[in-house]
Image 1 (tube, rainbow, N blue to C red):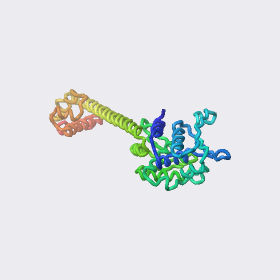
Image 2 (spheres, one colour; image 1 turned 180 degrees about the vertical axis):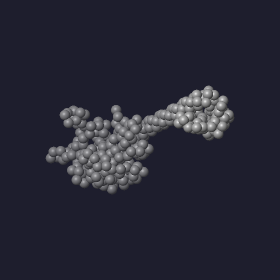
Image 3 (cartoon, helix red, strand yellow; image 1 turned 135 degrees about the horizontal axis):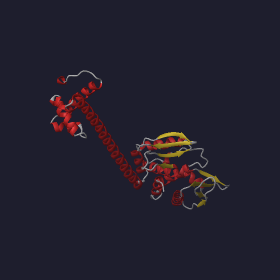
Image 4 (cartoon, rainbow, N blue to C red; image 1 turned 90 degrees about the horizontal axis):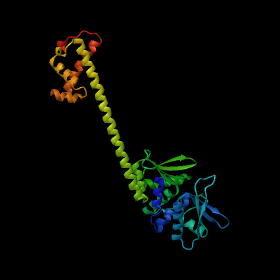
Length: 314
């Protein structure tokens, strides 16, 4: 089961009542896409998620007395590889649809103000929207992404505005015959899940994200440390080669001025140490050690270029 499925499973188990239930149901009916069937104006809602079909059935039967609701199951076919579930509202269609503010013909996508006139109703509507047409990437992935899809631009804008009210900076993109309202930042996805009531899966998202970020941080630190070690080793090897070149040229390192002689011998004795460690052995600072090594490098360069040099002036 995907992470998005886990979120939806948790949401379909939440208890909601009164106006909040109708706000969620309004989004579920509206965004799953209702259609009218037959002369009796039966309304059907289709989904590939059995839990969402049960959710729609439960909310309809709990909030409207004497409604007749039927759930159907269609087996996979050449169009879809998954089972399809239909929720059919077989009576009181006009009354229920009007109460939920849903136009079964899709001509009027705007949401009536009474459906969203309280903060908790707006949370519930966003929950229904996510259940009906939402998805979220697993926090295991580097690409954090949560989205809601609708074919109506006006509805997409209303969803974005609702999310902005909860400090969720959603954006809209026109894609695949509809509009996607989306969030990219991990902490805002966490806030969205909390807003719609997905507490357990939100905490799981945070745990996985924190572990993943910590793992990445450790990896970055390890890589940086390894790079520094390699850089130190390469620099030390160059210094050893330069000192050996000088020794071969002048015959004896003892001919060097004392400061350069001391550091040259210590470097040869400790080829893997950093400059800071070499400095500690000589009881001088890292910058002092670096200055002396630079003098040896200049001498090695003059020898390589066959330039004249004076050991007494180094």
